[in-house]
Image 1 (cartoon, one colour):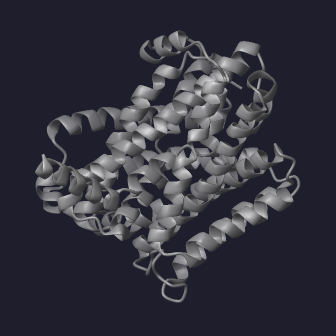
Image 2 (cartoon, rainbow, N blue to C red):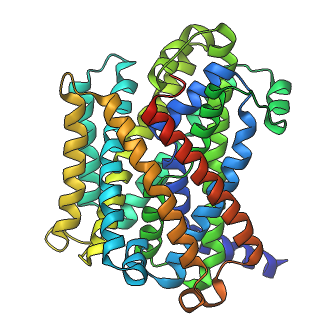
Image 3 (cartoon, rainbow, N blue to C red):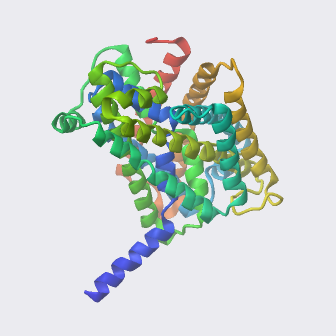
Length: 416
């Protein structure tokens, strides 16, 4: 018994040392844009789309596990591997597309931050500069270990959506039935919503950030199982949050027939239906998610650019040791925050364009990852198995088709 307990304790200690990249990456994917999408799904369709959390979770785990495994086994970031195996030109194209995409997404996070604090009557001219200053300070003056602890703490705050969903008092029997029973409506608006939910699950920045974080953390191959568990725990946490956001909005906004267009609208509308505490919790969740993602997205871009060009990078580096890394990070934060403060900026158009760029970039990133994950000269015995390849390729093809469909729909305004 003593030996069994000692073995369990040792395994738990190892997992505690490895945990971080998988949980952080999966949770930050529930950013302002994601929360808006899930809120709209619940408000417009009630519980009908709860079944999508199952394919969403599967897709998220498969792609993030490959990213984690590539980082653990090779000890290199995704940009490094793309440059070495596919050439500088491919790397430059990826970096340019990611830069455009992440700038638009960073603007979306600061917009979400502003909307969240406007619920408690804090002006965006106060919340956005303070939020930008905080995320800049956190990364530029912290160590990797300290920053990771802060990000893990932020991941824990997503529990507010679970509490908000419970306070909404849904019909749990109907909720469970909708979760295990796929429902489909043959109209473009419904299809676009399904595509939007699945499409927000995997973004190009996630693969670059997760792999870079695994490498900087120094996780070795002998801890690959713990790294996979880190990804699995993060996936479960992320999809549970998605599920509760849809539940809370379905039980209140959809039942009352209240239309919304943003996550901020959802938080406002929840107050008279589920109580002010549910609304405040929902708004706090949006604030946390926006601030969290506003730090991660520029950081992912800085990692990607510096890996691809061979420049010094990493949170453990000092400003003078990695000037380009911190310059890129700073520039994205300043531009993203400043755009929200300029009156008349066509934010919706910017967000649409970033979504289009995301759709163009995602297929290339996923194909590169799958090609790399099957290179025995890189991964040895840790290449994809046949079963994993079959699942991965089906998911990748499905995600590519759905993302391209969403991109074309966005460009041509279908369903609007």
